[in-house]
Image (cartoon, rainbow, N blue to C red; front, side):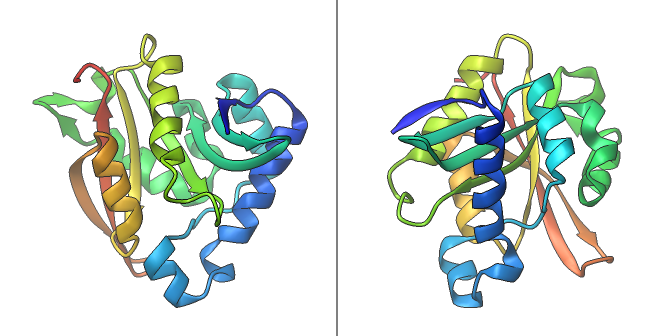
Amino acid sequence: MQITTVRSDADVQGILALQQKNLRRNVPLAVQVDQGFVTVEHDPAVLARMNQAAPSVIAKDGNSVVGYALTMLPEFGSEVPELLPLFDLITKLTYDGKPLPEYAWYVMGQVCVADGYRGQKLFDRMFQHHREVYGDRFQLLITDISANNTRSLRAHSRVGFEPIHEFYDPAIGETWVVVAWDFRKE
């Protein structure tokens, strides 16, 4: 298993294919509870531009993308409508006594590991690669996770993310937990 960054259009297509298999609407409820799910379906053109600006971290088995952790710079916040509430909220939150916008930060646009590859620490290895690639440019990696996605909440906590805020999104009737990973902390 190789952990690397997106290097080709084929890698972007691999992300999109894996995303489709794991979208909440395509995953049975029992599997959602046990294995997790993803909620946002990225536009292929936007995803390609995101990866040109800052390549996402991927796990590959041969030529197949079997995991991804999307790098989303703040300038892409307006291009993924489902994430607008998160980007708006980031401008209003504080971390460690300072407003979040005073930090160098980016957003984890989504993370997913393919069925059959879970439980092999790919999630942890992809996040460590994020820290290696982006830790010198950014202080914080921020994302939000559905409060219903308990597997994802546990996994993010395991690698170092801390909850900093919770909010309810009435548009979809769901509670979200905003988490941040401070790259400056060991």
